[in-house]
Image (tube, rainbow, N blue to C red; front, side, top):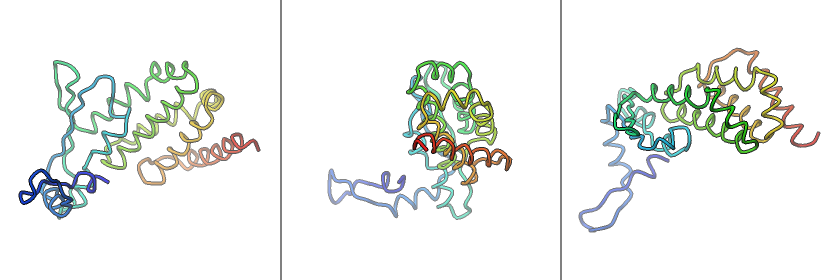
Amino acid sequence: QFLTRKGFAFNADKPGMMEQQADLFKSALKTVDVTFQNLDSSEISITDVSHYYDSDPTKVVAGLRDDKKKPMSLMADTTTANAQVRTLSETVRLDARTKLLNPKFYEGMLSTGYEGVREIQKRLRNTLGWSATAGEVDNFVFEDANQVFIDDPEMQQRLLDTNPNAFRDMVTTFLEANGRGYWETSDENIERLQELYAEVEDRIEGV
């Protein structure tokens, strides 16, 4: 997607027209050592929307480079007058700790009901997106999220009762993170998630 969406260029022989130039774009990306994005809104973080990770070329560049080396990934936080540049992994950690893993955040979301659970699930899903495009999500993010939302039976029940479909998607996201090699965890955790998925599916289907 990144290559097909971004691989256009103007043609000097056709003023004002853009054409697909995938090969030229790939040739340029092969020389990239650093990727960079700008976070310019305090209202929309890197896991609020898919746009940020959809536009991240980190793994694409690594696949194109002759040495297969992953480039350094940086993100500038310009949401305040005191702009800061952090590594992408630092930015993901900061976002996880202030939103997904922050009790004030997820309890606030839960207090809004159905849509709040969907918001928690969306954030978890977008965190998985950063694993897919950049590989910059620490294992502890998924492990701690699993402890918060899955290990606690009371929390499980709250999520299930409030929005069973979003909770099923949350369980699916954890299983996908493990299946794609983004999250290493115990066999017991995976077995619990598999059993939980079947239970939630039966409830949704009215079995």
